[in-house]
Image 1 (cartoon, rainbow, N blue to C red):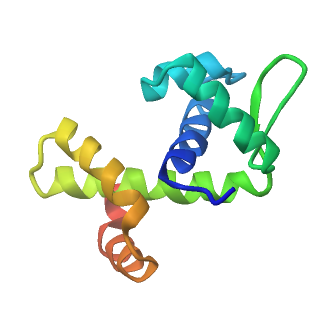
Image 2 (image 1 turned 135 degrees about the vertical axis):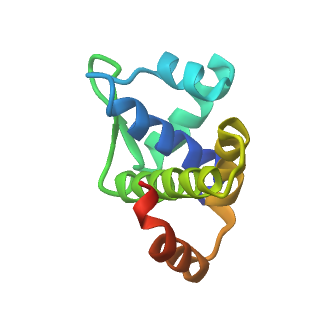
Length: 122
């Protein structure tokens, strides 16, 4: 499976949730992403089959060596882009929403320039 934006969103959500929870479950992803339980189940199955995540005996979700770097990359972009947009005067809610859209499509070159300029924001 080629990992598309939605898959990256799932990996990012698992990483974000794991920072505040001892064990991340599918229902946590449902609530974080505001997506239906059946949709989350289907995507988690695909992510597991393609070795981006594992699910342990307690149904906790874990990022694998393949999934973790992707989640970190997207989450870092999300945080910096959100902070940058807020710093530019964008309403925090709009900044958050726009960062979610930008984080997946921005080139690595552009990202590095933004990160160099705005790393103080995070």
